[in-house]
Amino acid sequence: MAIDSKRLLNKLDNFLRQNDYDSAKSHLLYWLNEANETGDEKAVLLINNELMGLCRKLGQKDEAIFYAESALNGVRKMGIEDNVGAATTYLNSATVFKAFGMASESIGLFERAQEIYEKNLKSDDDRLAGLYNNMALALVDLKRFDEAKALYERAISVLEMVQGKEPEQAITYLNLASCAEAELGLENAQRTIEANIEKAMEKLEASEDKVSGNYAFVCEKCATVFGYYGYFYYENILKERYKRIYEGN
Image (cartoon, rainbow, N blue to C red; front, side, top):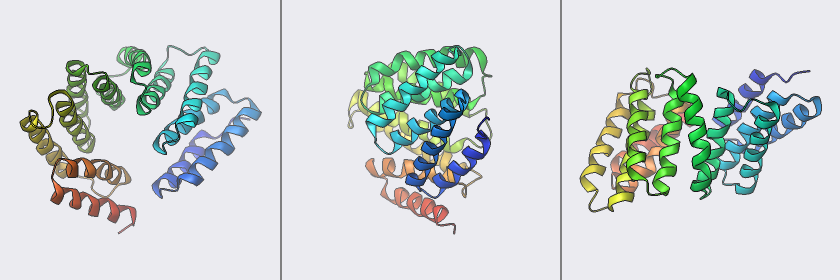
């Protein structure tokens, strides 16, 4: 009997919205066991993808890499190496490797995902933007700055075609600021950093949806970056926003 993936993901989303990561992980592990016992390979692949992302977020390196490698093995076992679902697994696994200081190991997976996505997805599919952003982060780690900047610009171009993606554009502009600092140093990159910080602020304020969980997540992710660059007032504004959303006020 096939696992009800939609129901599984809906319950997972409920745990994540409450920041209840322990329950989210227990939920996934339970259904991973069920999927393995019933031989539901699609569900196993889905759950391994979710587990690698959750463990990455929790800083659990060994587990994140284990689930990433399990997912990659699942793709090979299922014979689906060239489809979009496989590309998503390549992207997710590459993001895990990059997160734990293995940028060199991640690039091949990012490139494989890019090849499949660009061949199969429409130019305004925001999955492309997610790929470009994450791949660029790895390229920055490898000091391939021109390639990284080009991908960030491509991510922004994609997001500009999709309604309601201003928060994601803000993240990309902050990534561009960090890229400039990594390449030039904080002092030499100051003007570029300030320009991208201002654009990020504009995009966050332009969003028509300032009450969703996604907006709260983006505010939480961006707040510390604004603080790092000395924008303490705006950092506090974002903190108040995401706390209010998480608390349901």
